[in-house]
Amino acid sequence: MIFEHFAVNVADAVSVVEWYESNMGLKARVADKKTPFMTFLEDSTGRVVIELYQRSDAPVTDFSKENSLSFHVAFVSENAEQDKKRLLENGATFEVEVNLEDGSHIVMLRDPWGMPLQLCQRANPF
Picture 1 (cartoon, helix red, strand yellow):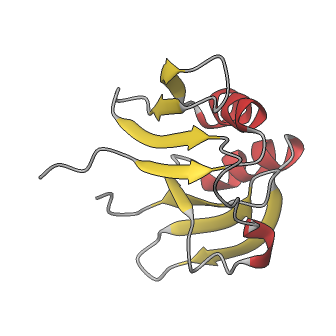
Picture 2 (spheres, helix red, strand yellow):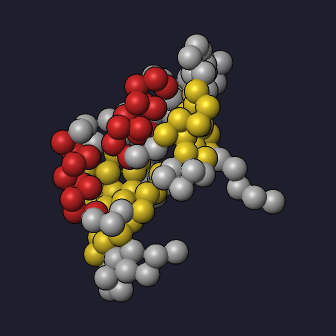
């Protein structure tokens, strides 16, 4: 099997999708213009990675109350420090930063809705 995507029910799908497109370089591959605003976002390689939607018949997780080690969305960053500053200027909040022994730089932020967002500048990329 091949992994297709990870889906998240959010309170304001239109705004969340817009933020991830504007700030994380994701692009909508498929986007419903009416409720539940089901949107599949692809990364710069063209691979769909996440689906965001807004369903009233399912609970929306309050990520601000969840530990970021329980769940986070991780992105490759070529310059984690620069990306951290840019994202903080655009509504993200800072959580923790780690410089690993191998030279990797990992930054944990939260998007404007509290979803944990990790920047991975790895010395040895996967």
